[in-house]
Image (tube, rainbow, N blue to C red; front, side):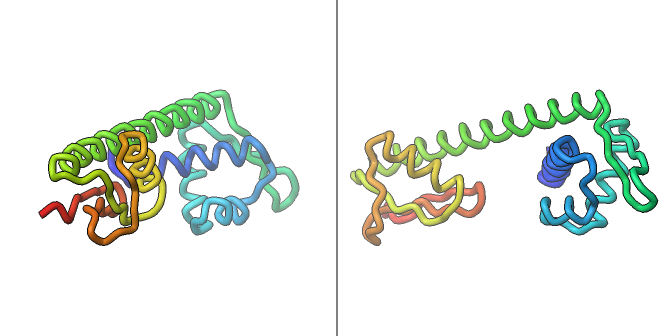
Length: 158
């Protein structure tokens, strides 16, 4: 699955959740909540309507109401499960990469590492290192795990 299709599924999941919590929400509010353009929300809503996941009714002259269908509830559940499974997969792969690098760090005679990067992947790296008895330090003489998104490389063992 491509990153683009993953992002589309996450947006659809978020839209379905927002509509379920507030059927009177408008596209402008949805766009703000998702951090995307109104046109993107409109495109996703049209797709969800075509899939039969959402119905539209006119609440007032210019106001629309979005209703999640039973198909939409099933889609939301499937998208949520897929999202959790992908998240755990990233978590497991990241932990394994860190453990592989820890083996190299230990083999080179070190018991500490610098982690250069931020975010969820960095947090997983830190926790895995601490769990494995490798101190996380800010010392330039220690080997470094360099994080770039989901990519990881080890430097400073030479």
